[in-house]
Amino acid sequence: MQTLYESGVRRAILLGSGPLGCAPAEIALHSSNGQCATELQAAADLFEPQLVKLVQEVNAQLGDHVFIAANTKLMHHNIITDPQAFGFENSNTACCGQGPFNGVGLCTPWSSLCENRDKFVFWDAFHPTERASRYIVEQMINGADEYMKPMNISTIMYLDSNM
Image (tube, rainbow, N blue to C red):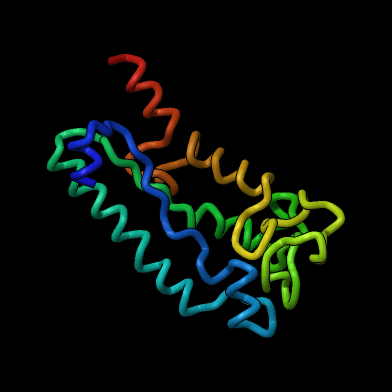
């Protein structure tokens, strides 16, 4: 982070780990019932608060809010644990892939493909669909500080426009 700052970076968003254990690839490897891989989720649970702490410490040293921590694990968590509340039907199977939960291999012309990607949280073994990504980006732009520390992108833009 210090190298970025010394290179001239004055605003950077550092993304959290995301839902490591809830990606269809990890569910295919670690689960027979479609549940998230608990050990990977535990690792993500450890990472997120450490990222926030590091961002706070570095920003305090710099005397400015240069770095912003985005809790992407929590952003994903909401739509993964209650997909229907966000208009999704499936949060543990990829729209495009092979094998269990479409979590094995790449999305290819020979893959199993869902009929409507807007009903799925994950596009492929690791990546969210466009619709899920829009929700995540919306939280980055306007979300509460549980998602973005110390502030969201709207606040950053407001502060930067008044400098």
